[in-house]
Each structure stands twice: as structure tokens, then as C-alpha cells.
Image (cartoon, rainbow, N blue to C red; front, side):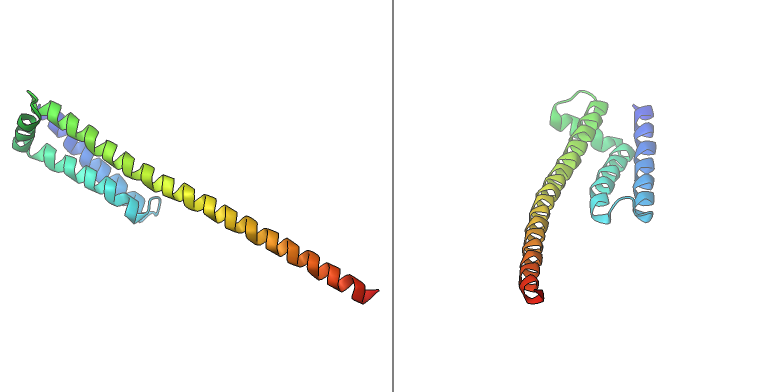
Length: 125
């Protein structure tokens, strides 16, 4: 179990460093990095406090604290992925609305251009 906790500690610290580096280099926006930082921080705290894992294992009815750690890791990342699915869905809806607005503006611009050509043609003849 100690080896698993050490691995999760190293992975959590590595994940935090990768996220902070990505934010610094503007590869990921700050508001999206918060979920990942929260997940990585939770995993770091749980891997550093094995007593809390034993207590959580008891609450979940699991026999080993390593099972509780894996269960929590799975739950945390499913929650993060769900949050990003919601964000992506909202972005898709906004993208569709924006494309519709651009199409309307292009139609109006084309119509104004045609009206301008029609009104300019008789005056020139």
C-alpha cells in the first residue's frame, strides 16, 4: 500500500506541475485548470494521509484503503470529465448560435449590396 501511495503522491505532484506549466504557457485557460488542480490536490492530500483513506474505505464498505483510493480517483475524474462535457456542450450551442448570426448578417449584407446595385444602375443609365 505504501508503494501505491508514493506513486499517487508523485503522480499528483506531477499533474499539478503540468497543469501550472500549461496555465503559465497559456495552453489551458485558468478557469478550466481549476478542476484539474482541485482533483490533483485532493489526490495528493489523500495519498499523504493514509489514515483518511482507511476511514473512507470503512465508509464505503471496502476492505482495503487502496480500493478506496482507486474508487475516489475514478469518481474525481468522472466528475471532472462531466464538468468538461457540460462546458463543451455550452460551447457547441454558442458556436451554433454564432454561426446562425453570421449567416443572417451575410444575408442582410448581400441583400443590401444587391439593393445598392439596383439603385445605382438606373441612375447611371
